[in-house]
Length: 363
Image (cartoon, rainbow, N blue to C red; front, side, top):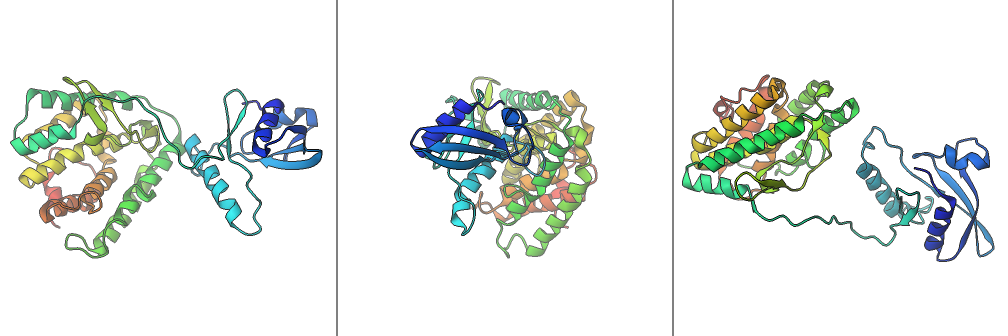
């Protein structure tokens, strides 16, 4: 992206409320001729701007963040850091002052965001009913319809299709596995949502789960060839069905790329969850949905390796559903079954999706 001096003048005039005349642009830490300053500029290099305001000489610095590792891969990551800095710099004594927070546009202009309080996303309105209504009905009635199986197959096929899009980016895969364990919305964040002592879980059990998940992180982080296009929160509350198998997804989360087991576990854990509520184990109509989903997905992808990496993703999703924050009224039996599953699945080297019930038992 090429910056334009005239666009920067308009931006600074907006910030200071008066006309600005730029006298000099210079990337800091880069030795170049003045006429080549903008050619040498790149994201992550501070840009010094000397200008005149009401006949007075002033200087400011535009700071950006270079795309890369350490949590800077996505544009949203870099925006979050800069938004935090804009809020925090001026609260600390002797810190350099932040004057504005802004954004560059695709045509080289700059926009001020200083008046922003919170951000929002505008989307289309989607008609239909969330998929969880189907699962509620199956739980209450105890029977499947032909459409229930068709929708299950459609969801599995959809994941097989989007997961076929791969990306060669080892750092991104390692990041996503690291986030699975340490992110506030993932495993460690979920274990922190539990009370220190409860009838259904002891602190020692949560500590043991966390330790085992670290082992799994080191096992999975090497499998960078698996990086795929993902949804990131593929569960029944984020799927809107209309007639037949026509559906739309909501609330894609945590990035475009990740581990396919994330999406597979996010959906299938709900078949287990509903079956626990109805039968106390994985059986009946929800077992049929679970096995149908797996059969379609594995047949269409051939991804048997998924059964070697899904374990910590299932642990995370089970911790979500068993958490008193999200489901405060669960029976002790259902909550304990989910927590048994979260712990026991971490001991399984290769998951057998056709033999789940032993993982629900106390050990």
